[in-house]
Length: 127
Image 1 (tube, one colour):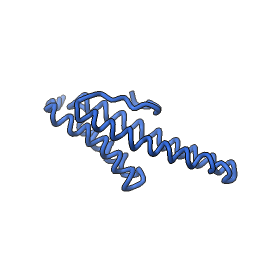
Image 2 (cartoon, rainbow, N blue to C red):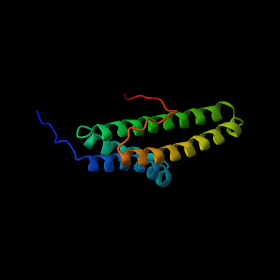
Image 3 (cartoon, rainbow, N blue to C red):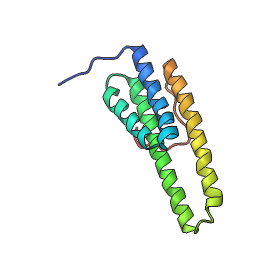
Image 4 (cartoon, helix red, strand yellow):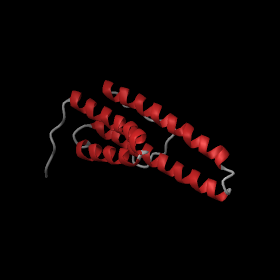
């Protein structure tokens, strides 16, 4: 069975940071659609070589899924209330988007230091 070689800590910290930066860049540049692809590609390639990359990859994948579900819930809520719910729900998702942006930057800085930063206010699908 193939066992990948462990990664140098400096490289692991860089890739873990890039996972978090990809989430921010993907959210800003593509509305989140390509951000999850970049996160998944890096995480799936390097997760077995570093526990830090595996941790931060899982955090960002869980965060992206949580954002997706929140967006679907807002869309359904606006539809059910015939648009009246948009008064509350659109600012709520905008606030959560700003929160996601800030927390991902905090996670990127923590990853660059080699720290395991657990993102609050998200559902943990992948443990």
